[in-house]
Length: 593
Image (cartoon, rainbow, N blue to C red; front, top):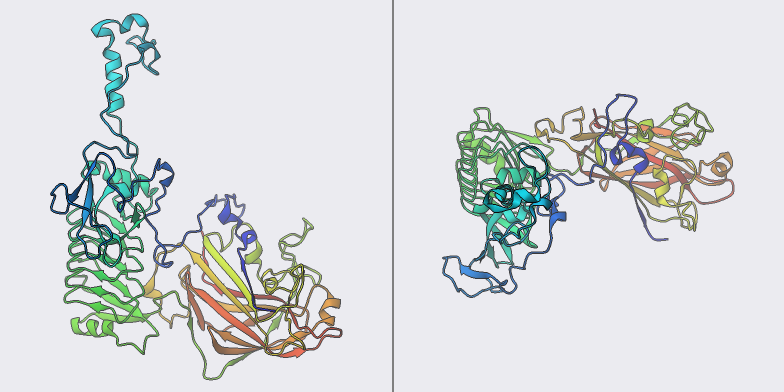
């Protein structure tokens, strides 16, 4: 049978993430309904552009490449009216729409005359004595005073919060394909801009935190124009991954303290962030260009992470930064020319090699390790139906669960702050079953009710099962601690794999276990390379294999893939099929509360 792939959410283990619970253990009310969205610095997906107030959109704005909307005229970049569109032509100049009428955030014309209503029907109006305005007060000039005040107050009320994409001015370019270049903030939104921004970003980050949209009317934002936000004070800026270029002096003299750069960044222009308040900067894991004095004059800048050592760094990019300024660069790039190390040496900066990407770091040995297990008992976990025994963790040879109690407990645990945890099992073959009783995914459930059974003729020598997993917590990256030589995990940043729990054979009961074959020896391949041999005992009980400290390190959000290949088996008394009930890979470094 072909390879089988299954994704498992482990929702039962992460109830405190998907809904609010009041934990009896610590008394804290957990956050509920956390959206399973990747942070901006790992996923590669856009973090802005599809803004959170999209539900307020009454109607889609006209496509910029379509016909000119009624009431609008097209101006050339030089401001000359009547210029013809050049949509679709490569290398064409930029064009902008300009309205001849005042248009509100929802596209509704403003300034229309109000229709007068009977004063007695004006809701909430009161006379000087506190009673509702009666018909006798509405006659004559004096009687209309209250109505006029009401009308003026209604007309001057704060407009509804606009969409993120409505706040900015921009230019369009058609080369190499249609995209936008943000040039600044629209004049009509200047006065209340930061108030709008705070409401749009749903209080993300600090006050004065700028969020750049990933697209406007479906057209991607690729560039920030030269000087677009220069001399405008702000605390931070969050870029969507669509942005590829940040123009010269785009954020010069802004006082920015935090910046989240886009994953697809290709160029940071000269003096783009000169004279800012930045302290730490994490650049994307790709080769890009930083031009002259891009971050110069940032006297508080003490640490930058440049994952790709082939990144091109211009003259005096970090001139005037902190006296103990240090550059951290990615490990495992010996085959590349290390421009970062050369630049640091030229300018007298300290340089440190760290784990800089989300790819696993594996320390392989000259000869593959030979690991032997520690045998333990089953326990009563979340599969137990008896209320008195449910999650009691009491050990018993007839108990239904194995693995790690922390993975099964639905209350407060190290998993409380986990945003995403993905498990996948894929086998080279499976024994056919309409109910999925022998599917690869069964090894992930930490339960004895089902198992994986290889599906080829004979005992299955050479067949294999691949387990991969990915864990993501919200966390600030502490790359200064990401040294491969660090023997301790970094909470919610670097995870160290410590144990592997295996339940051999079909362990539903003693009869099924004896009748089917069991694995005697596994070859363990980590990230495609032979790492160790696991020598299993012929027992129905859980077997735990300890891994050397800091041998397998996976950054937050990274995916580890391990393949287990059958080399030897213990034959079954009735069937040739070799089975495996459980396979759990534990790791340290999860932290909550």
